[in-house]
Image (cartoon, rainbow, N blue to C red; front, side):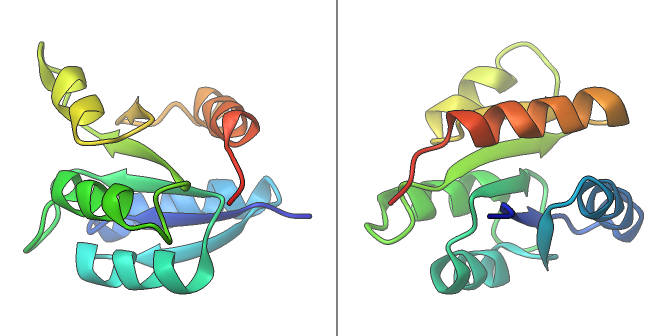
Length: 126
């Protein structure tokens, strides 16, 4: 069964790059450019993995992650922050919000696909 990944990213160029890499690697991709749509898609489609940008318009990615992780229907979904934040202390904030890990931007595409595969392999099912 092909894994389904929800990409939450508000920058069109980043969304295009990430989605293209994932599709070429054989994954099914859902897209959301804001947290509200991401939460709705996660509840409806139950993706295997969510790649969550942190800086989003309106609700930020960490708040969305907290909501998804407290919802019985979505708490099992692995969420990986996809972020340009790489400052000291940011990893702790990301993990405290409920993220299962993070991938730093800019994306190194070979490493990116390896990391995605590792997060999927470590995932749990509902």
